[in-house]
Length: 139
Image (cartoon, rainbow, N blue to C red; front, side, top):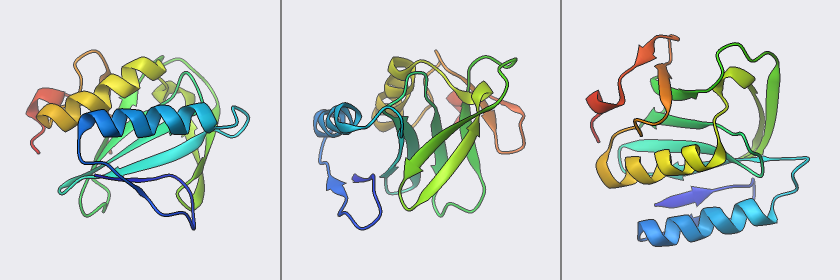
């Protein structure tokens, strides 16, 4: 797994879920909370995106190549406004309705790496805004 977190910096290579958790913990601790970062985790067939340095945050599961098919976390559907995340070469705004507790987002990453499925404790929708069932995802 390659963990990308900043333009011009080499990715962190992780060979296990334990190493991935440690890398994400470190990036979260080092992040300035005024500028939470977008972190991209490359897997053979998917890319996982998570915001670090903020709680609540988001998680996205993209299929490789990242050409528009993805699943995104859904938190409070009534939440208004946007949250800003920086890193991986860009600035991204996400609707606040996609923010979930940081620990839920982290568990979603762990579950996907372990099983290829989205965590059941997180509500998901697909790229078209339709509710998505994580048990149907395949790695």
